[in-house]
Image (cartoon, rainbow, N blue to C red; front, side, top):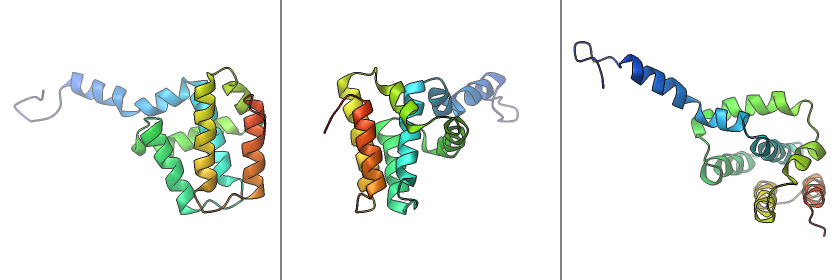
Length: 141
């Protein structure tokens, strides 16, 4: 609905737009497990000290296609993760995921592997992060 006289959105439409505008950011901020997974995905992207375009694309695809986040909000989500992640170790992030179902924990490891393999090779640091996370999630090699 719009005000017919000036074609501007009604007050209710503006409120609905504001609430829905940052739905993915709200989802991340209120879901510690999702935040922990995203933090580990970002850390995997940086594990080899160089974020290749393919790794950034893999991260974005996981966020949007597999986790249902809005692509337009990824920049804000990354800023949030930077602030959250400052005091959160990889071990702490993985521990937040340990209580999830086995299927969900395997899915998270799959997501990490997708990012690690995105640039065509798995660096030793990426492998260590993947193995350490797998161990913390209850999977041993």
